[in-house]
Length: 503
Image 1 (cartoon, rainbow, N blue to C red):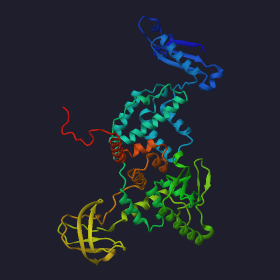
Image 2 (image 1 turned 120 degrees about the vertical axis):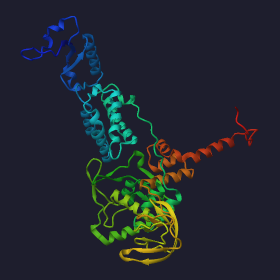
Image 3 (image 1 turned 90 degrees about the horizontal axis):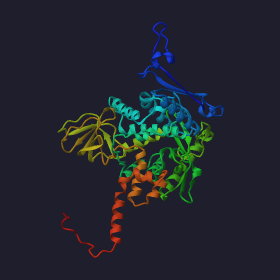
Image 4 (image 1 turned 90 degrees about the vertical axis):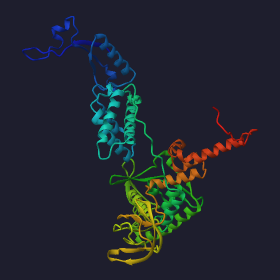
């Protein structure tokens, strides 16, 4: 490929106002004037690779610099790298996202948000071939500043996810030989501490499952709370996947929800397709649920239908044999499962909710509907935002209009009780449905179950993911390991306790 160079400037003819280009007389003067450019014709056999018939470059101070840049471009073309020319970061990100065929809908929506809201406004017009770490660093500073002015500030966790999206996109650009290196590698983000997973304790999981024992989906809550099954996996579990004789459930699919659409997909990771050993109680709950479901199915007859939803390729899949459905046989909406869990968790231990503000020293409280299965007479705790505020003793109940009740107290209130306060015993702190899965992992680790086995049961892609997510839950195991090592090593001074530290 022959390199052609020329020197041009932006001066204009005083009369015609046209650019003089390479005809400007000042180009031959002693003082530096104008810039060098280069162009070369791409050989026919390389046009499909390069994507164009001619390559150009401009803006160089010397002829040597222009020729060197041209030679570098030739070397990249020979090595298989495309010449991206004026392709901008924004254009590339759009092309990249469109080319990702295996993304789950939720992941695609997250990438789309990162690109449209955060990356394109600050980096969209930068040429991909000229993108550098300082451009990205400046962009993230601008994202932080703009995010701080929003009603919900853009936090460090979101910024890190945006950075990961850009890094993934540019890694693919390197693999496609569009750019020689990934400039994201040179960018540092501010440090921040990830919030540790704080799931319910074992006794709290027990309270929830006891409250859920009469729910139509009681067996599903046990699968999630005791065995760490994901929400979508529970919705997609099938009876053919249950081996009652071996007490094993095989997870092969999940039902996902994105926007107002549903899909049936493989589990989140390759390791998500797994066999889960079940305890006798959970197996019994599943078999009892199967009998109840069969009764519902027979009652509806031929109208019983699990529904048809698309798979990851957009092809319709007729669902069948689902373990957990609506009463009419349709598949469950994952969002409904989360909402149902919240309703059960809120109800656990609850007697009633305060409907009128009660000032300090009041001898009664007015509450809404009382839970039918709980005797209101006795000792209760008043909770504000799920935090205990004061303990009271209810001595009498007077029914009021509108399904309200007046509860007489043995002693006057010591604090003001606002509307919305809750009266109950051992109310559960607010948690997400996914925290039930976290609780299962926490209990398994606290009981000394091997990390690799816990990871396998949860369907994580590797034990490293499990260890990073629940590192703070491994402390008791670490202490046991430290003690075991110390006890295994014979020492003549065993048991001696130093009285002072060396200076």
